[in-house]
Image 1: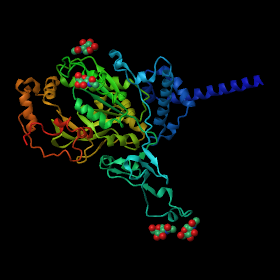
Image 2 (image 1 turned 90 degrees about the vertical axis):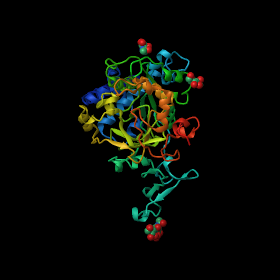
Image 3 (image 1 turned 90 degrees about the horizontal axis):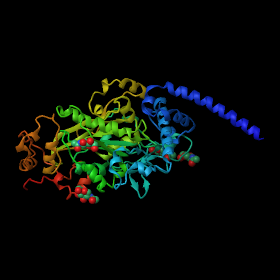
Image 4 (image 1 turned 135 degrees about the vertical axis):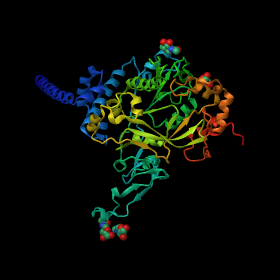
Length: 507
Ligand SMILES: *[C@@H]1O[C@H](CO)[C@@H](O)[C@H](O)[C@H]1NC(C)=O
Ligand SMILES: *[C@@H]1O[C@H](CO)[C@@H](O)[C@H](O)[C@H]1NC(C)=O
Ligand SMILES: *[C@@H]1O[C@H](CO)[C@@H](O)[C@H](O)[C@H]1NC(C)=O
Ligand SMILES: *[C@@H]1O[C@H](CO)[C@@H](O)[C@H](O)[C@H]1NC(C)=O
């Protein structure tokens, strides 16, 4: 009896080995992309491939869209690596809490070396109604707790001929104002965008994770506005601070201080702190080198410390004064079928939200992690340039993804999908920005003593003028207008009055 068991066991083991070897061979043949994603962790790789084979995630089968072998294999592989890592970390020495965010009183030195383990967002964004329509909770009209449904004109007798009950497919969610699509999950900023694949959108079963990367100097009002706007939508903020100004001088790590003294406790579990401790060669002579390098370092250092990334997660690189509206990013998180890279049309204003400028700023600022790795070689600055079309990895990536990659932008020139608030500080903050500006954005106004005077700066704020002496005519604005400013600032009007209401204008 025992012998028989052993024999059976042996037989099974040999079988498994053979199948595994075949699978390994097949997977290795898939080539470049896989290797890139797993990169230097090749030691883990073969193991991960094996575990990927035996372990079939319910998530991997439920993923919609991008449903070609290439991505789903990579995805399975990534999930396997993620599980392996989790297992490795589940040991006693390293608890997951340690890895996610430091104890504020802990050693400062290691904060910039921590890794962050991405988790799945299990928020039930969509709800199945009684009639099996899938409705986006926030975008659907409700009566009490029940979703309101609309019915198609045609009734079921016409539709299927079997039953007189209203057909399941005939039920539709009734969308609240500002939401569109069969599931009411498409916000107006996407509905009115130039997205070419609007008719192919599909609600995901498992949300993507959203990573938002920024460099921070002293834009703390806007940073609070960003964190509050995106707290429930972004899964991880990669925040990079340097002890050098863009000009190359030394500067204090103010963000780190605030992070450690509890100012950002409401969001610190979603922050990965990145520390740039050197100034790039040639950055003093050519300020644009320093400026670009900030983004390159932020992306490379930051992304190398994120664990559990999946190819279809989303990466967005913003400047500290560019704040995307929540609904736009939520859409990216919950839907498949959009193309990349994508930009965001932002409302433009100067010194505060009250000096509104014409048009929008549309910066190409986001793509999937797969595209960031394959096309942009993990360098965020390349994403923000519009050169993707000639990038060497582009054709390969496009072919592998099975989609034509057409850039688009969330929002439109008349539907703001975010805010770009330039020089939005109190006068002291503007002074500080002047003296830390890189050596490249000529003329460098910080070099002129008279332009650094607070009285001069206050006069600029009052009139909406610029350092070159021009004073454009800006339209009247009203804090009550749609998309005037991020909600958090408006909700705390008194604290942020200096950004919402011209402080020096005599009424
Ligand atoms: C089906 O719908 C049509 C038109 O809306 C209506 O005239 C008809 O009475 C309906 N039939 C049933 C069985 O409800
Ligand atoms: C369905 O509707 C038709 C017409 O209204 C009726 O004659 C039939 O009895 C109904 N069938 C059922 C199963 O209710
Ligand atoms: C920045 O930090 C690094 C590492 O601590 C240090 O070596 C360097 O001298 C600092 N630079 C300035 C300008 O403070
Ligand atoms: C943290 O430090 C800042 C600047 O020194 C200060 O304004 C703030 O009140 C401090 N916050 C806490 C929670 O101690």
